[in-house]
Image 1 (cartoon, helix red, strand yellow):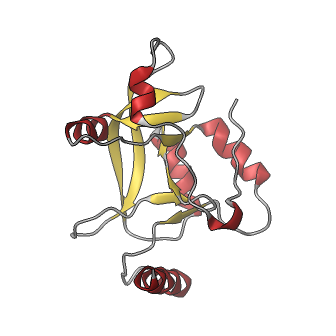
Image 2 (cartoon, rainbow, N blue to C red):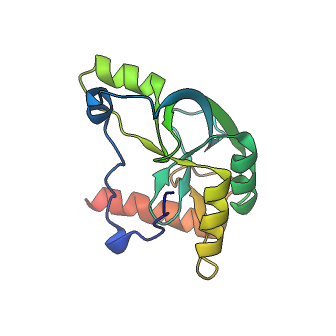
Length: 167
């Protein structure tokens, strides 16, 4: 069973769970299966992706079923979104998945792709019971300004842009 770490000390970028070269080096892939997973992103007509994230770690995630993703979306700030299906190579025991399309594209470009955390129905219950205070478990990736965002989300987007401009 995976224990979800909801802390991200010092706001550091967390290492991914596994990189694609580690997956390709495995001799036994019996723990993995190909399945459709679901993730959510803000709806817009622009280039780029603004997915739902685990708030503390700022990691994009996928769910093994639409119902779990639906429960997560109910807890998030109300914005226009789309649910996206993706064909993934998934290890449910380790709660990680590789997007097959990303694996192919990154491999062709000589790059590695990173795994995504998989949230199952049981994990959502565990995460909710471990939640401290009113801090949200999930949030939208900042960067897309729209008439459906809260003042706090607008302020976060501006702060993120200012930080990037200074770096």
